[in-house]
Amino acid sequence: MILIIDFGSQYNQLIARRVREYSIYCQIEPPTLSFDYIKALNPEGIILSGGPSSIYDQDSPGIDNRIFEMNIPVLGICYGMQYMVDALGGSIQQAEKREYGFAELNIKQEGEIFKGIEKKTDCWMSHGDSMEKAPEGFIIAASTNNTKAAAIVNTSKKFYGLQFHPEVQHTPKGKLMLKNFLFDICGCQQTWTMKKFASDSIEEIRKRVKNKKVILGLSGGVDSSVTAMLVHNAIEKQLTCIFVDNGLLRKNEAEKLKLTLGKHFDLDIRFIDAEKQFLDALDEVTDPEEKRKIIGKIFIDVFESEAKKIKGAEFLAQGTLYPDIIESQSAFGGPTAVIKSHHNVGGIPETMKLKLIEPLKHLFKDEVRLLGGEIGLSDELIWRQPFPGPGLSIRIIGNITKKRLDVLREVDAVLMEEIKKYGYYKKLWQSFAVLLPIKSVGVMGDKRTYENLAAIRAVTSDDAMTADWAKLPHELLGTISNRIINEVSGINRVVYDISSKPPSTIEWE
Image (cartoon, rainbow, N blue to C red):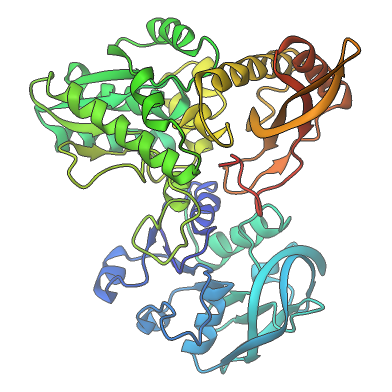
């Protein structure tokens, strides 16, 4: 078991994902937890995450320094390294030159955490402070052109500090560094699997729900489908699933889901047409955060209304994932900065009468797919690309109208058809279209046009915490563009988004 301390990094959940890739259980906790609780967890090692704070800020987060007396390995990443340096008697200062992005790491101390890694390798930096003086017993193990102390080690204490982020894909050998820490330094065993997670979750749901009833919002996506089957395996007919057609779905989505759900699920499912309710509330709303919160509120209102019709319904099950939580707020009360709220997280009012069940809230998407396979879901459902809860509302920049939704549906339908035809659907994390509030001049049939602009977004990723734009073949992009412009009334220009995450998010809003 590895304990991860959340100092506020946008990547702290990604650290957990990397640990779990090696079938090792880990927990993310806030720095405010008690020392007695830490001892009770009995971790094999502790990882201190990065964060947006500076160690010399008045309100910078800190943890009980007795963790450094537990005789277990500690790995500090970015701010976590700086905190360790400060706590153990070293000093941190503002760097002369802020370092963000790729840097060449020059390894001076081979072995241990750098075992099996070349002396020069790329790493991903994101910091404005650097170590000025090392604590007693530490040596500088690696540097970059801008950062003298890019890594420090205290071999006798098994304390390690990395100024860069080994957990992100932009550090090619980062996974190996973490593997060395987990196995060679902490001595962890590979005992955590999706099979165990499934059995533990089912038992936990049974104990919590007892003889009460649960309702669940079923979209047909991976998250809600896995949640539904997990809860169904635990309590069977005590679960009622509700599919809400919010008018923000893709073309023929509701009809397709009815067929898919009828084919794969032995569940009590109720279909609700709430299109007018959602579109009326979203009229003239352009701010993306307001869109998400309005949709979240209506979503809950619909469920509360349906819950009154289901005698004994006390719980609402949701397919909330780690990335949903980290981009909305810190999962455990840590200092993580808000990027955007999610419909599963940001729109839930305090007055909601239903208690939440979120069995997937500690999992990443790839883990959810593994879990889906473990509990018997088909590949058709498991490999469905993520579709946001707010639907097309956050893929229409600006005002949402029925007309604009219909245009985007047609654009999206062409895109998905070609992506599948060319065999790229499973290769991509997500592929979708965005309707922009911009018009441009064009020529069609020798006549001037002044119509809408559509953007295509396609990304590759393992976890949605980081993503790269997909290098789709020019032939495919050309076919998509030609078909959209020729077949979709109201579009005369198509552009392709080549932004990575970070700094951009996957969705535009």
